[in-house]
Length: 138
Image 1 (spheres, rainbow, N blue to C red):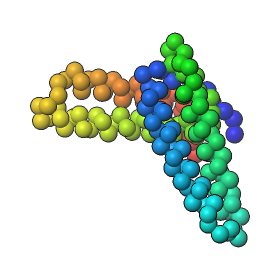
Image 2 (cartoon, helix red, strand yellow):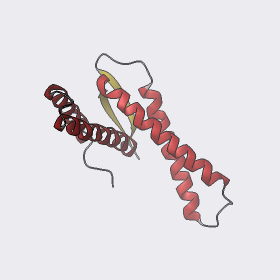
Image 3 (tube, rainbow, N blue to C red):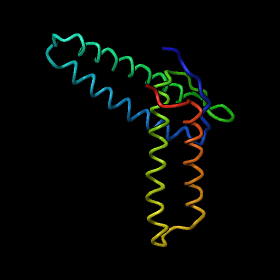
Image 4 (cartoon, rainbow, N blue to C red):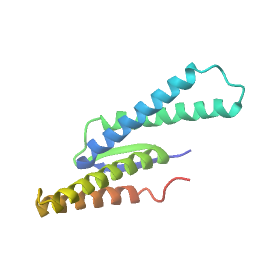
């Protein structure tokens, strides 16, 4: 599988760090759980574990890049397209969920229109970044 490189603007780096950290923690728990199971006879299960370890390595490599020194405009990340797409998609979904909460607060008169517009812009920027990677991986 070939690598993909993407420039992540500084204002989106923290959300990406959060989604990559969550993915890493989930993968670690899954790999550790599978490692403690008795060795299965099935080659499919071994292949799945091997795939999960490879995915974990991808996510850790991306996290190391996210934690590197920022560039003037952002961070240049290189990794598997699937790992990048999934992390950016999760960050997009986080922004969408936050917008949903803000819409409810707006309806109740608890926040100003300007904040809601900022959230919509943030969601749009995350969608643009995700869209730059193309359609979801197969």
